[in-house]
Image (tube, helix red, strand yellow):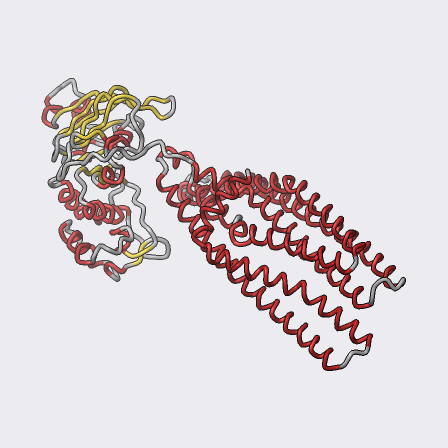
Length: 578
């Protein structure tokens, strides 16, 4: 981690908080000045008492001491409040940028990183470096000033004591700077292990039903123990390194303080310094521990946060492979699309081989094929989740690489068998938390899809809570929500990817009517394994091995005795092709 990188991160997220940063610096410097002043006041009080000065003068010194002590506490409280506020504002801004970056990154990035790992990077790593924003620079500079101030005062009190403590402070700083990497390496390994554990838990808990159905509980627990062992080992190593680091500085402090006290006692015995001066030396020596420990703690925290800082920067610097086109405009209404001699592979594994397919605006095409034949890949290319290796994908006559991603994806709607319901109301799930969509529009969409009766069966209507802790919906009811979402967006192309494969019998009639209404006046792509699923299609395309092996109307395919479709009908195999 370079210092330039640190400055860049701080500049980006602290510049908007410049006023708070300046206030924090002022409060910190004021607190330092007040702390440095009080031992001198106490020395004057002690020496004055020994010299028999008037009580009024001693009372003024005592009042001054008390006032400065109280002011120091007020400055400390204010400084702590401003530092925490500054840290939260800066880190929340960083979280927003990281979340935005994750949302912007390509589909291939998300297939390579599970959600648990990304949550750990967006929130866990940022939490680990919160102090870097709120306190690191100000406190490092502040404590360095405090340290220099203590040494300077000790030099004025007695140059021999000041020189001894200056040498001790220099040794302590060298130890801290040299030992920091030892802590940082172990901290980075601990952060990686934490992210790996989070990703594992998210994935296994998401598939809990399948694990139990297959009796794989013991296997999952075995893997959990492996991840926890790695987390324990790396965390223990990190904690021990940090503790050893702090202990080394404390041992140096004990040695330095002992030497200063011995020297002070010897000077007092010889009459070179007064009793008040000895008290000031003891007090300043004790105070010297604070900036050294704070510097040690801040350097330690920085080393522990180093792994998080590196991972945050890696995520922020990750570039999209799929970028906006120059902004070609898609036509309004139903959209045609064309797959023109497209070849595509995930890595080195070819999925589509020289596929050509044209669908006219308003046409509904059914795409059949075995698992892995390339059906879903075609829909991903329509959304431009991937760029083709060869050939072109055009929507409304426009190459998808020429359109802006937001416009392209707003014109293509998708409904799958696995619908994501968010924790929130029916209103939130329909509008995807867009508060600008009025209830009247939502009710009109549900009514047009024939779902107003279904909505009436929910306990609180649009205010019914869905998701975790809310009302449970069947798979078919979840797809009703997804259909309404797409209808609300009014796309020109609708893709139904196995959208009825987990149909709830109680909602079959509603779902069928809603699908019919959704496809009316729009181009439709119905992805399926089973022939009955594409009954509503104007044309059927059969994929096999990443190639189009058949294409034609249902009547044409049924009349062709050499067709796979006709063969399946003849044999009565109306189920899965696989």
